[in-house]
Image 1 (cartoon, rainbow, N blue to C red):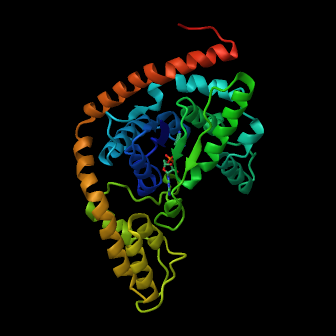
Image 2 (cartoon, rainbow, N blue to C red; image 1 turned 60 degrees about the vertical axis):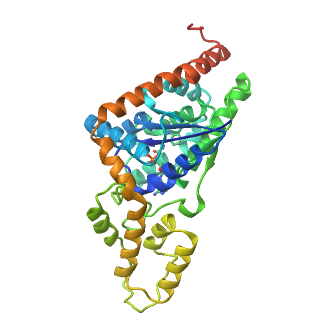
Image 3 (cartoon, protein in one colour; image 1 turned 180 degrees about the vertical axis):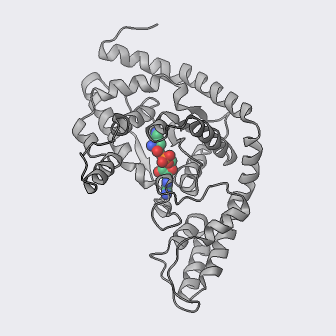
Length: 334
Ligand code: TYM
């Protein structure tokens, strides 16, 4: 069976970028026969950026509820919290010992942090934790532990999956064929969803639209998307338009064609925004209702996550780690 795996970092409220980049394609893939799915909450990854325990906990609940509201079927897929699987940090260490430091030096998140330091004329590594530097190794452990074939993600994560392939390959070369080499699955038309200011929608830019914002707030946020100063009647440019890209991520091909024509005909920005809002709301409204119901019952979510992790450890994680410990020359724990 094809194994599909993806995770979301529990560092904030789930947003439209998470939905179109990861949740929607992953849930769709999980409905295909012959697919075994692994969807998880990356709370160890959250600690790299967030040092507020209450926020990590709140976000874990929100992201779990979002997965369920978007149609994840907990009796058909593996659904779990990263920190409930101690084999993940254990594998992280085994991979750390084969991971090239030079490769990690080139990871986007680390390089971006170094570049910011250079602009401010600080030491390259000022304020950068080893956790940020090691982020791709932890992520490789998430993926390789379950021998995932396919990882649905937004474009920003592709480099990390290539690194997972690299670490897996080195390990296999040294110790025998233990790992499947994963491939990123990126939806071309929504590879990078823009946020309110036109940059990539991201918690770090504070430009996100929460996936389950109440209808009125969703409307307000969509009306706040940056547009140019072209007046009604003037032809609008689809290429540079965050609003258009957002619409594209939700609408059908024929709806997108109609919107392209409306841009060419000089639709007023207010009218375009109203259309984008209605289209997105139409898709998220039924899920929003389920989400609100789920958020009212955290104990139910907690029970699902614990049960998922327990079963998954027994079925996959513990046996694979035993095999890997033996392969590298460590003691058999059983
Ligand atoms: P995270 O939490 O930043 O984002 C979760 C998923 O949402 C996608 N995404 C986007 N897609 C399109 N447009 C956007 N603006 C946008 N913003 C976010 C991301 O590409 C991602 O697919 N390191 C990962 C979490 C992770 C993971 C893993 C993913 C940990 N281990 C193993 C896959 C496999 C992260 O921080 O994603």
